[in-house]
Length: 162
Image (tube, rainbow, N blue to C red; front, side, top):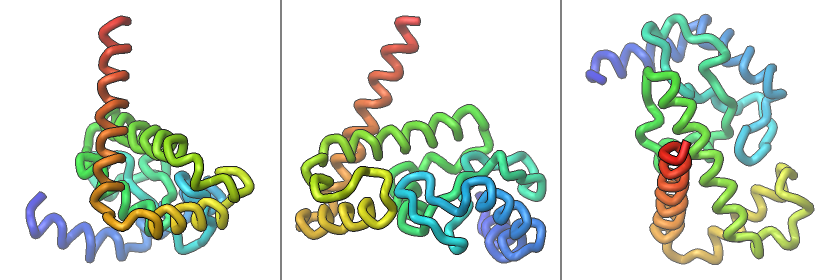
């Protein structure tokens, strides 16, 4: 994406009335809850699962609701999530969600005091507990990348068996 295109997207489209309308529709559909951690806020972000050929034709079906932290996280862990290909975008979104589930499962001991994984505050508190225990944030990213890699291998294997 060229600098001009990025600038037009960030300072044109994302500031437009049209974007605000689509974003609010997505927030309303998901009751303003982050689809990863469950944090509920009208300030949550709308993340493009895939981009339509013409950005001005974005509809709520292109979007999922994420809190700022989870939105930043998906772009760090899945930089390839920015795509115009619907199938690839949906696959990247599913891979990210499954990697988070795998991470939660592998770090289950962190959640012992949390009242279930679905609770907004509990999930956030559990993540903070994990961050405090992990002195090297790079290790966390490597664990997630490994989980994503394992997921891709298992999906590829299942596809080949089909």
